[in-house]
Amino acid sequence: MKHRRSPILGVTLLETILYIALLAIIFPPTVAALLRLSQETSLYDVQHRMDAQAGTVLSQLTIDLTQAGSVSISQSTLTSDPRSLRFTDSAGTTVIVDRPTTTVTLNGGSQTIRRLRMQRGSAAPFWLTDPDIDVSSFTVQAVRNASSVLTGLRFHLSAVMPNASANPPYRGADFVSDVTVGLRPQTTET
Amino acid sequence: MTDPRHNRRGLVLRGSGSEGEGGFVLLEALLAIGTLAFFLMAANGLAFIAKVGSGRTHQAELATWTAQEGMDALQSLSFSSLTNTTVGSLSFAGGRWTLGTSAPQTVGTNMTRTVKVSSVSRDGSCNVVTSGGTTDADSKKLESVVAWTDVAGRSHTTTLSSLRTQWENPQGTCFKPPAAQSTQVTIDFTTAGQWFGGKQLRMVYVTNSGTSAVVVDKVKLTWTNGREIQQLFFGTTKIWSSSGPGTPSGTQQSGTDLNAQNLTIAAGQTVELNKTQFTGSMGGTTLTLKLTFTDGSSVTTPPFTPTGGNGSDD
Image (cartoon, helix red, strand yellow):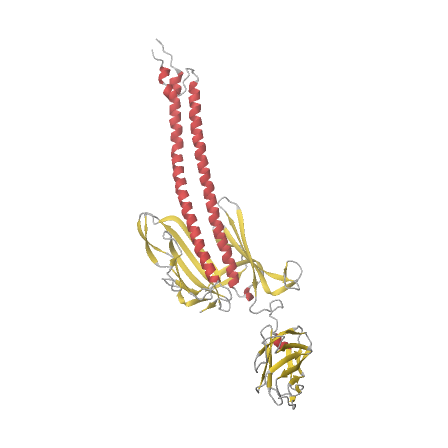
């Protein structure tokens, strides 16, 4: 006796195979895309924080230095670590900017990083950078005109974001900038 | 007998007994996958937009800092080093910025900077004008232009501009400070100072030989006896007396600043220190006269002894 195959069974199997095949094709890149999306979103957030933090620090230095009464090149340590910059603000208070090394505790453990710090007069020093940003490079150069008058300061700032688990060491976000801050005529060199 | 199609209802979902239902199942599956793919593509699109936006923001911030650095570098140069150029480039060596002419200068990935220096024209009132006027020897217009291409390939430009003034050594007229008022004034006390009635000083002449008016803020006389001053005239105007106008009130001892009521002496005008009266005979007394002007400058005579003064009013 001849049985006629129901076309539904065959088609359903084919559909199932097709369905699985399509899913097999679509799922891997989809999952990969989602993972990449998650990672990149995290990186954008970190990068954005880096930009904002570095911008804030440079703006703070620019504002302070354009109002400075004097800049003490001789008492600053501009060419060797630990670097420091010493100037007086508009009220005559001595301001010191330096980059000490400090240990911070992140989710993945403790890490040694370098942070920018500012101290005004005898007040307690305060941090200019967040504890999860490592200021890997901070250099200051005196800028002079043709008459050797101090007319500005040139900063090189490099910062990276340590990884919470310390492996790999950085999260891939960094900020590098060279900024020259022009001093106003009332600012003298001491 | 069980209809095998009934067992497939769970799989087919919408089994209707029609042989054509297999096509509907495939369509549904494709629709579901298509919908999923659509949403995933949308999510990827959002991620791409976020990436582009983040990258553009990052580059825009770097461009702003780069342009600002160009501006500050120009400001750090000596005024004499600012030669006009539309293709200026900057290099830093030995603690000094140098202005070159090889712009556009590559300053980062997909980023160039051009600095420009140009002359500034001002009108007769020293206001900056874009056409006409005369070139101001003490001003330069500075521009820092940063051009960059974002991750989407679009071109952007960030431009900062400012004026630089040679305020410390101005050569033109707009920034030269006016001459001190005292430099325009001479006091003639040697030939004409005389006592009238023994206690009233007249005929000391103050001349403004300059090209602009001067304004006397204070007058101070010193003398060598214990008399006190009662009144002070310049020309026919009483500018101070013990009972007013002016301050301080009451007769005053030697060396007191008397408020001159902002006495104005026009350019080329000569006024007489007139009817300056004391409380007693001043014959033979030696005086000095100091005029302090509203700009803070002052002129003081050396000690002089007016003629006359033999009257006795003690």
